[in-house]
Length: 200
Image (cartoon, rainbow, N blue to C red):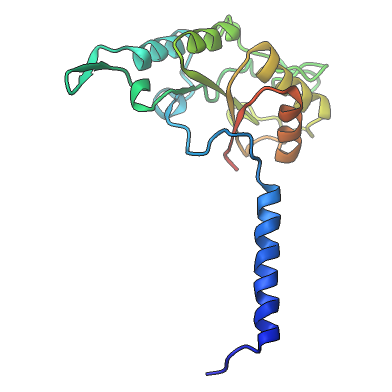
């Protein structure tokens, strides 16, 4: 059995330390998601058959203290399950501009107004119940096949953070908006803390 020379051992320790430092620099430390977010996401039960009323009903159920734990009225959020996530099927598929499925000429996301007449009301309700609300991007059911433009990223982030005021976003791997660094930098530039759920 051969042992490493002191010089080789120092070199390996130095390489390991450098790798750890690079990993630490690459991590986003915004105080969010230090533990996995716990809660509910619409896809797991409703798939594409979801709407605003279902989302708001689930929120009521998660905040309700009709259940008891050790004789104490307790909500799911009291137990740590405070995140309500809207998954796919919120978009107005086919209403996009020149071959885009759900983005208009300015890159804005187009919401299906029949099933989600007031997206901002969903997040307002969540916040009023002390819940967090998550959105969904780079969608699968109605994925964008054409090259993503920067304005699509910018407008999606604008609607996510400023218009609808979501607290998190699940970014899937189906469409062409795959640049997680761009997503992250645009979200961080807004000043709103948003959990990014990487579904790549």
